[in-house]
Length: 309
Image (cartoon, helix red, strand yellow):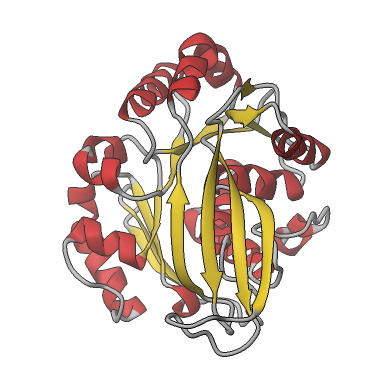
């Protein structure tokens, strides 16, 4: 199947929504929900929800929950041919608390087993990567998996983008980042790469820093998201960069915004948009996502009409 190939994992998001002012040391009344999640799964669903072709190489489990995850993706239009069913350890768990404003107040993650996904790539990676147009890889999972995917992508000339996780592999193997066509991260993650706290940096200063440091990062293009302050981007080949403002949006749940932004940006690039326009796509999809209690924006067959001009 041509289109985007997403390689990563499924998580179950256990979300706690505070009903009033959140007290991190006390008992808080509210609502607890179980939601299909995982950054890669979210990205795959986001792409499918806009009508773009996407396939998901991942793991699931032979259980009611595992089967439901796969069924939902398929129903949204995602090709699930490369989702491998395992007995146990195929699905991770992410627990998050949202405060009264919908912002993340705390989180704990229990990752799935990576060995089965590594085996899937060894057995079928050649055919799935040869067939796709571009790849979104969950880079912070397994160095062995990353090495296989990046080598196959280079062999077949396929652009690679990444879902940023805990940054452990990205920081220890910076050459992986240099293999990416565009590196999308948030200001906290950029600060870890650049070795300084960037959380209070203005978009103008962030753009200047990005222009000065991108050559050391090694990737062709980079985008840094800054929450309600928007995002900045810079492309080495064209020496073009800029600031994209955020879209004023009523916040319901901030989780999944970064996944949606990445999804939209990659989709824009895959449609031949300039990086500046692709970032606008990511901004629009992130805005739609934070207006819902899900980790993805709702299916929207008319999504691309706003970018027709």
